[in-house]
Image (cartoon, rainbow, N blue to C red; front, side):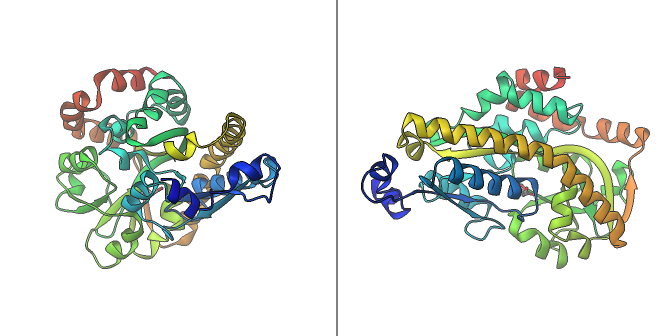
Length: 328
Ligand code: LMR
């Protein structure tokens, strides 16, 4: 690991950090899969700006967006190998490390954005952040994106039965597969960077994502229908490598966390704003036929998706599900 630290530019940091000898910044590589114009993309840049300025150049943060450096799976491997020091995956992608993260995928679970934020900042959310330490990863913050909605190329999706026979892309994990199964649809896990092409060539008929991802990935070019369903959430945790983290001094850790806190506030402010803006863009594109679920439709989906709860409540942890439900 020492070698890897040197390779990523961290070798001379102790000296430089103390203001003696030549200053060699600690290089922090931040890799992610989305566009720069997303809440995550913007917050990563904000964190870079803050940490570089407040540390007087002690840190240098390199942000690599759009799966430029690593895709979904690779970024997790790269973080664990300390080849990158920060990632912010959708928590769905952490299912292999801790299945409880799939809580975020449970359909119609949180009452509102505020309830989700409160849960993440509370006891259970914090427990999740610290649950990956034995696997070399430390959670630093929750960066929520927002509600997911369905798109597809075949037909308007208004009621559960409209999903029959269609195939959807999923991020990862059993909950999302089960969700589509409950609707009579098939599913296939694909890395985020592969979704556009898969929609274009019909490998899958549809997908689910936030307005902002749908917009910034230009899915309207390869999809015909958008259902405003808000049936689930897409949220991130910012993860660092524990070896990298432990190589920092207490002062450096404190500064790092201060900047992370500020970037997190910024991300949360931006998330709703960018999703609303993207929804406007999608409406104005004229490329999508848009349907918004009525209360009765919504109730039909809640009913249809009950099997997901039957199968996954205990796998995730009943106490997590109940705590999420009870957060107002
Ligand atoms: C997805 O794979 O759909 C999302 O997790 C991408 C992202 O990071 O927002």
